[in-house]
Image 1: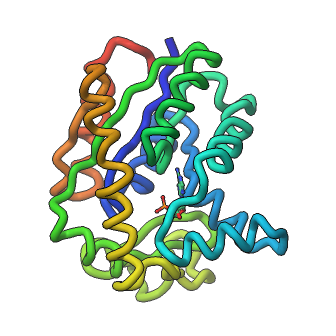
Image 2: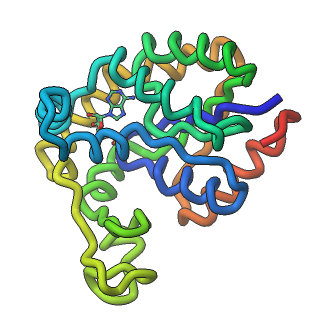
Image 3: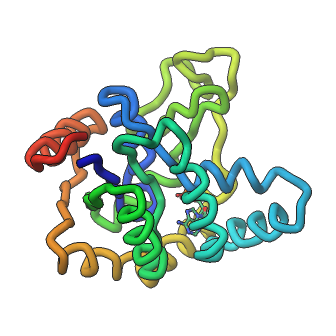
Length: 221
Ligand code: AMP
């Protein structure tokens, strides 16, 4: 049975990096609600403005809007097999909505917690930079690009610093995570669908661990 791999982790835990690695090594599409909202908020519609103000405050977009977007995106052809969700679900209500979607799509959910000590997250977030062309994620402290401020694959592109990766918003986002997303861990653990990866090594080491974890389940990736 195909799987919906749900990556859970605090902001800065490296969900995006790991989802991208799964996509490039195993070919499973990476669906990032954060990326979709970042794209959406540049528009001029009332919804785009609403999304922008929520993101700028470190809060969460409504469960209904988020779910509709995930439902639409995962109904496309590339999600007919397994896929990875990066940043969804983020609330117990979204987790319930995903149960129904998984059932409709005939897929099994597997949640993986990327566990990073809380005191490391702030540095990871404030040091994070990404390429506007390919989305490659760097960190000025732990994974700097070869040339400062430039993507290794697209040297013409200046690396970007996410507007919500500043110290005040990081604090809000970490609080939102503790309050709204952490309850999901109990939810998936109670139904024996939670695996945990201690994410303290390099992103390559963490990825090896993630692949091992996913391979230890009989379902196909
Ligand atoms: P991320 O890139 O995953 O850190 O997401 C960036 C921002 O997008 C979050 O701080 C939220 O404002 C919004 N967002 C992303 N995913 C969700 C979700 N599943 N539910 C609600 N809001 C979300």
